[in-house]
Image (cartoon, rainbow, N blue to C red; front, top):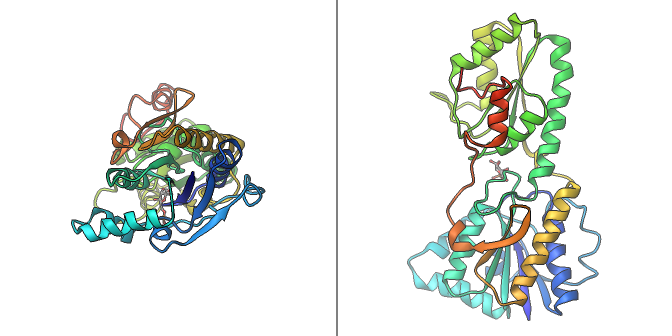
Length: 340
Ligand code: F6P
């Protein structure tokens, strides 16, 4: 049996651990041949591939990024969704010319949807969810998230001391375009006073009142954690800039902003992310061995499992008012910018 592995979409810590998990299990436990497809789905079209062996998969467990390269997949997505059958035939032809029995696609929501479309074309595929945003539907957690939360929490910890010294409001913007998981988890772990999430929105008066009340209580500084994807009413500014300016203008308290950005996505994965990637990778190899295709591996209720790609394609896993950390934050008086 011959399998291909590719990585698509934004990178995240833990991808290499996952490639290693798939590859070493496939080679050593099931005697499969494994190739790496480079730079995402475009590598399939250009047949840009490398052989992967037990030796070449060694020494990558702790590396950030992806040894295979990755890409946002505009050209490929256009082809696969194209009504022109020629485009879809081209994709199938490339898959068969590479002699693949299965393609393992490691990626976020967009990738899972594309993987499902490949399965609809009749190709054998298995999806593995990844993203720091933790918003892939059908799994309770994605690798990359734990590392990103660690980095973001460390950043908030560092802001505390400088905020306290200067009696300032600090606004920190964290990644999460649709989902506020990183901001929620790092905000709670880092002791933020106000946590603003795309899923919940905000009311400026609630934020201002909260900061003023804290100052009146003798709390000389405040930390605001905001997710990059929050929709700003009537402005196209970055959330960090917008909230810092408005808070300073409306409270009179000196305010500074920090945009943490790609630091959250880079570097070595946490032990939890390495082990999650390793387990999911191993399960993907097992599914292939058993001939179970068209599925995405997942962690569900602390068990490594799998779900049909059809069930996850095109959906997002978002924070809700019932998310335990939101409920507990509310009970402790942490503001989510919407409730008084
Ligand atoms: O990986 C997810 C994510 O980090 C989002 O939070 C962010 O909006 C996006 O990727 C930005 O990535 P890029 O600039 O690579 O498109």
